[in-house]
Structures are given as structure tokens and as C-alpha cells.
Length: 68
Image (cartoon, rainbow, N blue to C red; front, side, top):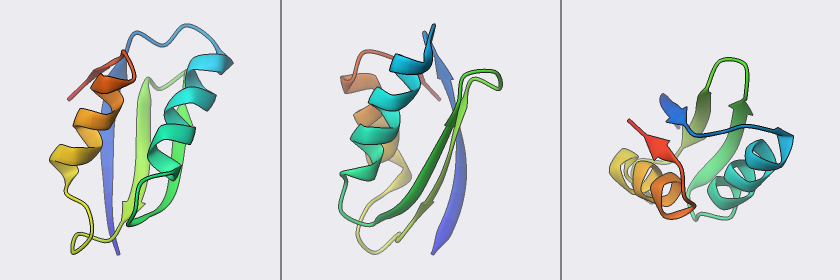
């Protein structure tokens, strides 16, 4: 497992947090995703053999948020 932190912009409520956590959690290879509204970030544990960091960023952006 590998861990990464992705900065997330555009979140305004806990609904946004749940949306992003749900999108990330549904991805193959993601073991856990902790999304923080206060820190404006997502901490993700993932299998780099199954999913790339770029794919995680794209999934957040596809959900309508800014990610880097």
C-alpha cells in the first residue's frame, strides 16, 4: 500500500466530503480515503499496482472539485 495526500478545492460542506470519499472508496485499489473539509485534502491509502495517483486526482476532478 502507498499513501498520498491530495489537496482538494471547492468543498463547502460535509456532503462534499461524503461525495469525494464515496467516489474514491469505490475505486479498485483504494484501501481507505479520509477526506477533511477543514484541511481541504484527501488522505488516501491505495495499491499502486491497481490505481495511480493521477487516476485519483482525475476521479476527484470528475466529481466536480479541484484537485492537485
